[in-house]
Amino acid sequence: MSNVEKYLRPEVIKEISRLDLKAKFIVEGFLSGLHGSFRHGFSVEFSEYRRYIPGDEPRYIDWGAYARTDKYFVKLFQAETTLEGFLAVDISGSMDYGTTSLTKLEYAICLAASLGYLMINQKDSVGLFTYDERPRSVFPARSKNLHLTRILTELARSRPGGRTRFADSMSRLAAFVRHRSLIMVFSDLLSPLDEIARGLAYLRHSRHDVVIFHVLDAQERNFGFSGPVDMVDPETGDAVPVAPEIVRGAYLQALGNHIEEVKRECSRQRIEYVGIDTSTPFDRALTQFLVRRAGK
Image 1 (cartoon, rainbow, N blue to C red):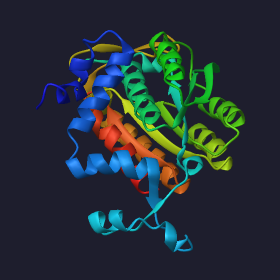
Image 2: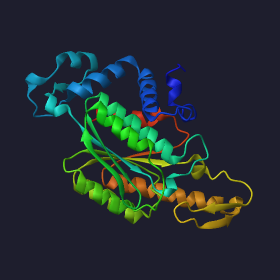
Image 3: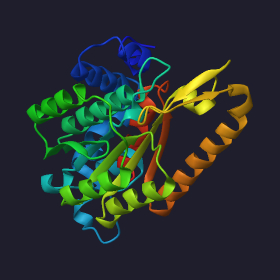
Image 4: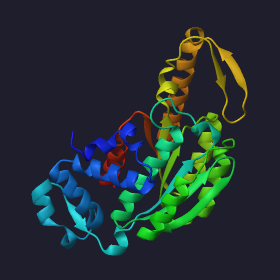
């Protein structure tokens, strides 16, 4: 592992204080780990080309790219290459939980910041939407480095609190984003499935391209607690005494069912689902984003 690639590890990123540097190191570590030809494709195909679609003018086919990749690409004008993206980050109380290096919110913020950094460097535009029971910060999409600095500053000072009202928040986001955009949602999705489905439907009704980054803590996924513990709801403060060895099986089944239902709902609405936990190196989520862009 190179000195740059180590910054893909959450435990290393935890030690960096400035969010702009976290994002920079994560992206540089990610790019350094790409195969050379894939890295070239990232910087060229996404900025100046797209895959050929039947009906495109043959004169715009890039035969050099075909010779390198055995795939047809057409050259784009600058107006066609700009993607508008929004980072929708859940900052509700349930995100303030972590048993590894980063809390769910810290992990989500680092991932969102990295994707914002990545997009701005690809000349795309990025906006921000943070929410709990209501919108907390809303930034329009812009493609300037100064705008990214403002977004990172806002993310860095975000503090978790309040309950989650997923459907209402996504409705507000859909009303704010007037042009078809790529909307990246970062949340633990600890809401009833019907509320999640309604929230996603608001975004898809507006024809947005949606990616869900489902962020959970490693302990939430495996329930590796031992001995009597008090489980506290971070959004209500309610505490319940629990014997982990008794409830572990039922908990894991309930969580597994919820995740599968969310996946099915995303599939039904043609939404990309990326499930990760806070111990996952950041390149996994970035790779999902890159592969999705390559398929457009």
